[in-house]
Length: 76
Image (cartoon, rainbow, N blue to C red):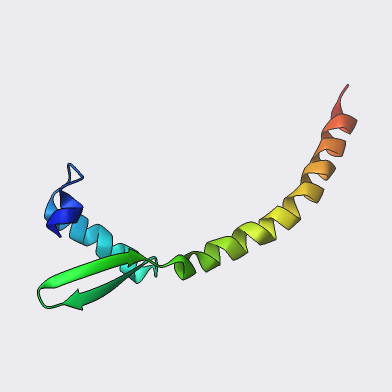
């Protein structure tokens, strides 16, 4: 943990809380080796975000065009 905390002006308990939240979210995996814990990012945890962005990327262009037409028609 000291290697992680040395790069930040945040307390070790705060770093632990952040890592716990990241683990629960599926964004970080841990591997224990004796007293040491090794963390790594887990890109699979971003899959729900990628899916959400993709759905909205497909949805919004048509809606923006519709909004442009409505706003254009509202001009006095």
